[in-house]
Length: 426
Image 1 (tube, rainbow, N blue to C red):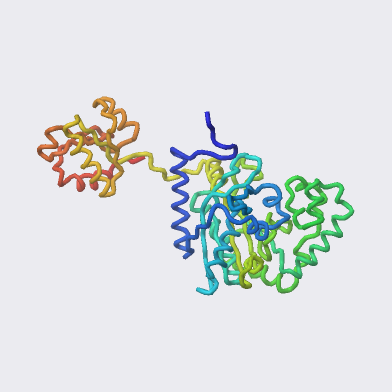
Image 2: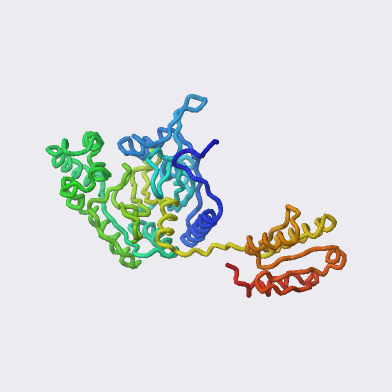
């Protein structure tokens, strides 16, 4: 039997309804923030991710799905969303249309990593990017989006962790300090950290293996190496987060896992019981040099991303109720072949009027049809026989109270409008 690839999953049933509910909430939220929907290809030139995400990141060195296409070009399945959005921003010259571009995206990404709870090799990611302003209000607005989303979904204990990586001068000074600090300890760290030490010692602070080691805990803090301009930007971010009543904690060890960040980096977590280290549900930051690095004009940028699977797992752990509709409005039963066309037409007309309707496609007997109506949690059952077809008087039964009615076909919509409001739909 052919099975799905390791690290992937099928979506159906109630889980599919939950995903659609969150997706619809995301769309409404983005409309309120006035962000524009973007969609980029699932595969792009490998060079985009090597240059954009960073040669020293775990994503590029260990996790990307790389392949050669039939034109012998090096391609990579999308491992994250930002690089593709930046490429689109540059290629379509969006920097010439407006001073500020606010983008949101949602779609599948691919990373070859060990599957675990809430983490898959094919995963769906929602994110936002803003180009064209280095004002701290933009950083605060971007941070507010996942905070707002998590609150709307009903998660509790939402906390924002923030840090600043500063500008190039600040990072260069910090880079030199880390080299001096880690040099006598490098043999005590994992093999990956030894590689990072030579290429980008900042990545050591993001190590999953040595995260709890005293060496990392006692490492120099980036906040001690910020120049005055970087300090001012960080202070302004905190001022605007306070203005939005967003709780935050300054975490000097927070660096995130991608090379393109400058100044603001952040993570948003929720207090999910039993979720362990996966309490962090999203992260992001500012990347003021990435557009230029990928061939565009000097442009400020800031954004974040969150994984749909991890978010849904958190909602499940917290037993957060979701308004999932597990019912239909009407179940239409044709009594025999001679009335099926009439019943089928009625079914389609009800759908055109906005009702959720199911039809007996399998020619069940009446008893089994009522069982099917119960299984579908139908609010009303419509029975069409020869008399109903000839007279346009519809037989309809409330599937909860078991009351039966005879309704003129022209009055059926008004009847449903009035009575469905009284139904206990779920």
